[in-house]
Length: 168
Image (tube, rainbow, N blue to C red):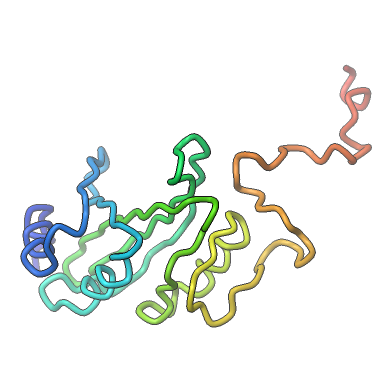
């Protein structure tokens, strides 16, 4: 089977779901779209179940922090793949840091489980409906989210990082 073209993907989604997304230009040749938060679950479920598209594998899910983008400070990026047609796509959805809540995709892709936990752990994005949303790599006592831009790069209380240790 031949890979799906960007035009085929866009046309099929618009025909079936309407204008529920915005195309984002991508210099790496990956079909990339932004989906509003309210439409995310519906669109991803369609991409998974639709026989013509068949994006049956969640390759990756990650967070991004844009602190200067008012009301859209946090982004979740999903990479989906149609294994039979060797076609990849990227979906982005944005949320406010005031209410960092995104629907969990564990009901569609079981592999989203640990990736959503990791994104929660590092960015503080809560995945609504996740079966076990808790920290996965950082300490449970931690209240910050270390991948957000406001997180300090160095712990000011560490004595082994003092300037005199480095000849300054």
